Amino acid sequence: MSQPIRVLIADDQRVVREGLAMVLGLLQDVDVVGAASNGAEAVALAEDLHPDVVLMDLRMPHCDGVEATRLLRERVPATLVVVLTTYSDDRSVIDALRAGARGYLTKDAGGAEIRQALRRVLDDHAVIDPAVQHHLIDAIASAPPARSQPSPARAPGELTRREAEVLSLIASGLSNAEIAERLVISEGTVKSHVNRLLAKIEARDRAQAVAYAYQHGLA
Image (cartoon, rainbow, N blue to C red; front, side):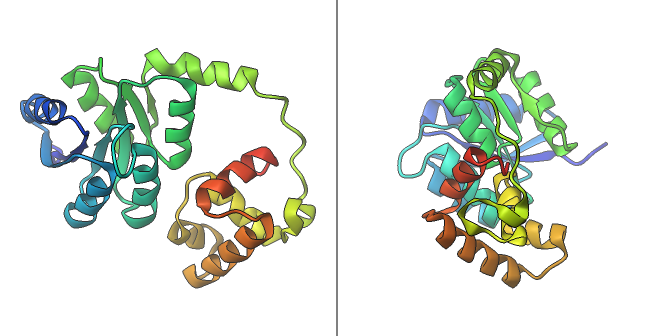
């Protein structure tokens, strides 16, 4: 039998946290290791407990689920995120997936469905609730036609070929360590590329860099 899936629950409503813990606790191969009431607490607990998956709500105080997902990708990259929320609008779905979430479920999901989603993301699959899939389709259909991807040697913002490559990997949700492994360079070199490209495109943080990458066909 496979090892139990170690799960951290993040939701600002106590009744939801306790209900999820009770439902998941009835499943033989799921172990609820902790619960957080906001995104910042979820990140802190994940750094301490190293769960396999965080079940992440989106609308939470202090640090919302999207920002918490970004932080987890950087600080605890081995921990995966599955969004579990009442929000199914296209903005919420796209923001969560761009931040690095591997799954997106609504709170209509039952225990068996959640368990299946947890197992699938650990098997390196993405999981999108059928109830929200049409939002992704609508968002893609309504987007303006993509421009031809610029040559990395002549990327916008005077980026070098390597900086454009790093920016593309940031937009894919990779952390600095993962980019370093992908490009076979040191993590320190990646940090230098990131700092330079942020300055060149006048982005305040990685989130703005991701938006820039999508706007300029680098993602």
